[in-house]
Amino acid sequence: MVLAAGLGTRMRAVSETIPKPLVPLAGKPLIAYALVSLEKAGVTDVVVNTHHLAAQIEAFLFGHAARPAAPRIHISREEERLETGGGVRQALPQLGDEAFYVLNSDSVIAERGTPALARLARSWNGEAMDALLLLCPLARALGCGGAGDFFRARDGRLTRRGAAAEAPYIFTGVQLLHPRLFKDAPGGAYSLNRHYDEAILARRLFGVVHRGHMLHVGTPEGLEQAERYLSGERRGRDG
Image (cartoon, rainbow, N blue to C red):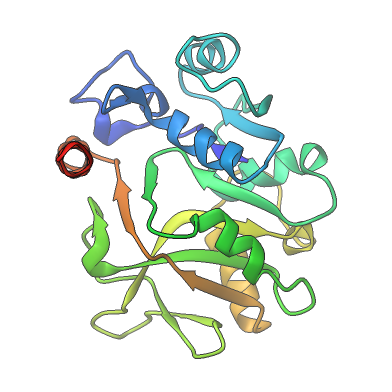
């Protein structure tokens, strides 16, 4: 699943008329980066939730030349915005009975070595886990700020930063979730953080540390940072 139903309020300085998932980064709409990652991971079907300027996003997904030909797209239209938790809960009938990827459309994962989605899949242990998050060290997380989200134990289990001044890892917006995580899900709008906290209490929230950079494109400043990073990558390849 790709989460694309946000309002993109902080990006409206870039455009009032383009939904954030379609804001161009290095000449390609943000959401295309998530779709390419999923295609490379062998995913054949992707659910995309839409709400704000939904018609534009759906027009891109069903026929724009810049969209990858695969994977197949299924829409979960939200008449009222359901946030991350409610959005995934609504889409569960389309996602099947096994663990599934969920990606934010405004985070780009710059790969290094084995692709991050493949590493998540290899690390998944359905007997021990309800959720497996891709984490990034703060120093390699561009456009994020803040003091970090999680501590990670040697066995991969996660705990919140809580009252600590700083935690070493920030959540990238890329994850594997199992449908059982939603067994007590409420109706309406709510955040996936509710289920992360439930999984922490059950000792079933785990994390994998990303080996590359994370580019969070939530603000115009984040977009500029991501453009500079990708321009440097291109110069390095050309050089």
